[in-house]
Length: 628
Image (cartoon, rainbow, N blue to C red):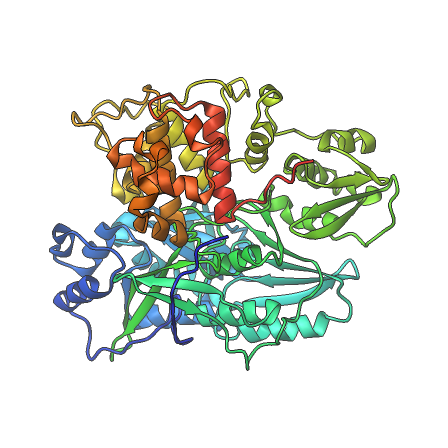
């Protein structure tokens, strides 16, 4: 059971992007500097704050969510968020250092007609690149324009450069649409969380309630939006419960919870629920998804979400402009932040097949037979019918579903327990197993293959895991980054280790782990990637990872007592490792009793995977192996 944290109430007017604190007059560079010093979630180096312009400061900061908007840009920002009728090409975008990442395309818009897709990266408008424009925000201003005028967009798609010309026109961005599919699935698509999104959830759920015995909420491509909206949406789905905790620069913890008078007591959805996500599901979309996961309310399908675990306040100016600043880091109801790691689905499948996998799992309840595969996932029973699963339209999705299944997942065919391989053979649909072939004799084989099924554990070039092999520092960092889905801003640069080359296979993951403060080099500035990792090093890194992800682990590390570190088993470790070792023991991360671990003995790959599994299980980001 997790440690409970003391929290204070947070006003529901606090939002991810629209908490407005009016400031008189157009903002000056000096005022911007002071606002960043006071409100930005992390301390900013003075060499960045001393840059001459606001754009230069925010660009050097490397946080695409902190930027200044002119009055026109701010009005456009609000319209896009709220689904208003605006003039443009009809795309929602995220600012990046390289351009504008398309997260969704409005139906029947110029962008949709021209073939723009979510995931496209807009790098120029009418030949003006993001570098020439000065910032991604400035490039977005060039994409916008007057009704009836043309704009030529240059974009990158799957490493290919394309140019598309379209005519700007009024575009409506509905944030929520709903329908009943297959005569029994209530399907809500939410493109962002704007002013009306929360109430739209209520409207569509109530409208479809009589016809629906299964529900799907599609958040693929949803970049987030207003905290008020997502709090209401979560409340309408599952009732008045804590939606998130937010932590400010001073470490104060507040809770976001819907007003019980404004949502249905136990929620409007009692039937099985699926949530679809992808790498462009961010911010408020991740809050919604994590709440469904933490309360065991929904089955999450798709790919790991984006990893925006930071919230912004928008400081309006009297001239209509605004300064958006990252002011808080947020955590799910289980105290877990998606910051730089995202939300990991229960079933990891290709985002483009996630809706088809959902429709297969949402098959009508049926008696046991050779034509019905019943699965226990996320606390519910799901039914897959053979006729659909083997059809030309759905066979690829069924194969993906089988690949995503973890060992010991309760799954029956005609009342008999089956494995994914047996289900595949019975129905004649080939699939690609993600399980390792060389872990059958490992005491941690199920845990290793559970992580492999989620795509968070990789083997060698031959597809083997090598469970008995010693874990090296390079492999540790790779396992850590892959397991948590970590990433960092490109602007943070490379790790300063003298023995890490850009050609090394581990260079990128070392950069990520270093910039997140998870690893250090030796006194000579070396990383020493091939050195083995002993148990005390591994447990220290594991606890550090956990503390970054989970507030309750962070608190446990800060509150380890002298009594806990005084035990003989903990005293065998170096002083710098004892708090982490004691915390790991108390939180259940160890693969074997602490007394059986030699601090200076090299950690094996199977031990590392097992302890990573236990840490992820404690956090709640994975579904535990059930055992037999």
